[in-house]
Image (cartoon, rainbow, N blue to C red; front, side, top):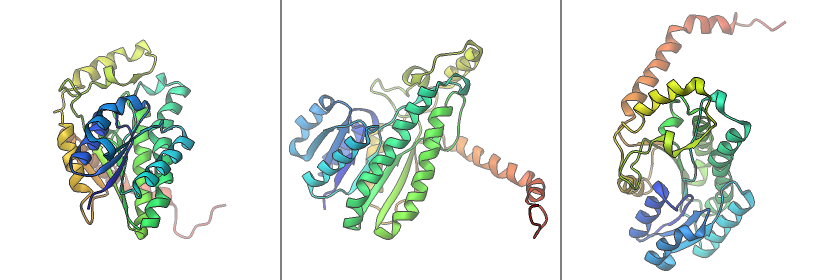
Length: 283
């Protein structure tokens, strides 16, 4: 049975690959982008199987209207892909209030609006699959990624809670955590050149140079392969809550989690002291 997808950020990148793969699989797609013109070639290639929607995820009313239009147009919604987002790059000291608010408005609030708009339709069907694009940066934070990681860590928590809240309605949730994926040039994107940059403070120039030397060195994933993997995930009866896409960050994440467990274990005595004596009341 063919599925109906609702994919945000479908103009390029992984979002475009997800939409194209679903359409090639015989499914239907409500594809959203901030400019409908960027979806013209998708419509030309796939015709009525595509519903192009001009939508900015930071506009809550537009999100609810877009989801409503998609549900009414296709008669149902099966897979919701929260893909729209961007990376704010800058040291924490460099972030302006607007930098941080804009990052959270798009990456966090925009995703929540899509979830809230879609849930009534999925609940009524007693079925559906919400796919949240997070990042390896949602599992560990690196220098100059404080705002971006904050948005992705928040999404991890929101969707982990969501999965437990909606399981009883037959709704599945999967958090996708990609590493670096190749741009159209075939290279792994360099966040220092492709992200939204905060105004630089020269005191962090040395750090920026060190990060630039590392950026792009991870093996670049193939967006088309990621899309094929997602097609498999949405067919699973019991899909994983979390799924890494790509191999480059797996060894790093193993070390990060091992270090966290070791730190908690090493400091367990002080943790127990912080609890206080059993039964003691606060005075």
